Length: 147
Image (tube, rainbow, N blue to C red; front, side):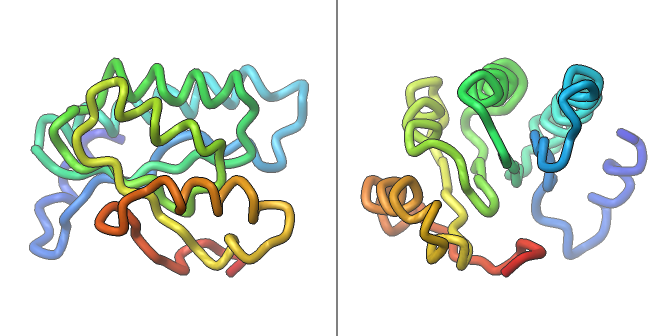
């Protein structure tokens, strides 16, 4: 996989690595450990490529429990370059995640907000995230498949 990503980054329009991260949407409970192990290995590999290439990284965190948010932040803290932009694509996790990443030393945490912010079950958490985020650190997108 690493050679494919590195090759793709040679394209003149390539400007970031990703999307990579953790998404357990639809994963059966009996498959969770296996899927997380595979996703985290892929996540780490792409973060290392982004750091080596000096590129921003677009990350996803979907259907996350507090334990998965912890794993997500731990992987980023261990493997991502702290001085490169970190774009939280289609952000739907706890409002504490961007704050935790800043505490880990990331200097450019960009929160991607999609039309999902209008969903009633997400309004409070996403609204709190948007409220706490400087306008210069918001990324408005419609890149998720359900928007």
